[in-house]
Length: 233
Image 1 (cartoon, helix red, strand yellow):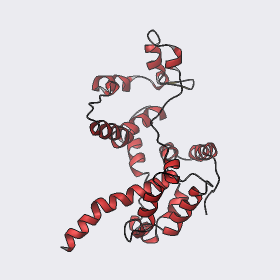
Image 2 (cartoon, rainbow, N blue to C red):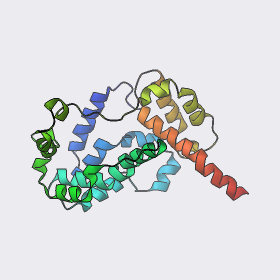
Image 3 (cartoon, rainbow, N blue to C red):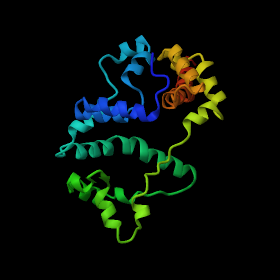
Image 4 (cartoon, helix red, strand yellow):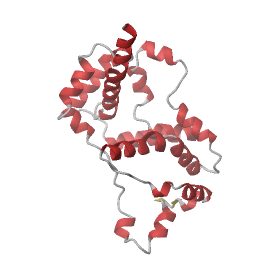
């Protein structure tokens, strides 16, 4: 059905080698997607797949990539991120979380003049011999120590895998498997249940897929149920 015990490093390696065999735009999409096509074909119901027709979730990424007029792959993926991941993901999360805590957050490197200047720089100044953010690090060398400039990237990831096996397990189980509408209308529940069981038994980490299912289900009951009740009234 699907891999039960792949370690994250092997999943990343497999994704990398597969993406290298594709067109650059599709390869970039694959390396950043959370659900493989093979799993999606099993996860989505026949009705859902028929309704989607020839639409593929890579369309937004591929369209942005192909619209970019940069001279190389690095410039094209940077443009794509600016048009998709940045406004649709990172900035949204920062804005919501900061506002929820009454904070005003600014991203100085996203200043219009800085962005326009950066777009004129060759990719070799951004990614140089494996070094990311090369010119930025060179610019700050006089004022920052090497242990700050070259330390490992620290993201804001959350322990989804642990949460789904622990503190939000009951909530997730209730939303995913006891509701009578929502994901049941679009997905094969026996696949969702199999993913859930593998995750709970530590046979695999399906946290990204299960979290997506949970968020869809919670969104459904927050908004679509209200709309349906309104229509019925």
